[in-house]
Length: 133
Image (cartoon, rainbow, N blue to C red):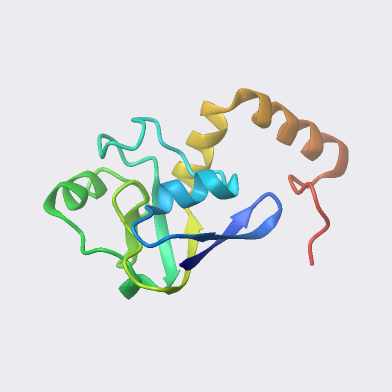
């Protein structure tokens, strides 16, 4: 098993335990973390783009197809991966930051959650559903 920690959800950091072989996108879906997937997770877009802050070496190697799609993404850095392609191959902790592109795509794909977030911001000035730690 491995632990995946999503650092920037509306609820702050969210963790999920997943079996080896799980993609980062599958982990996000299990954790209800707002990681986009406009193409359905088939490496057809860059909306599941994340920055891996810790545990990069626990992930599968990047294939040419993923690298080609990342060329189309915004804010690509040395630790960028596509959540639909990056599989967890070794036990340990993977910490990641969901990119703005991915975060906004997720909310566009989930209008009910986007409306709820917008209402929270209007009422409280914060998108968080829980107080910050």
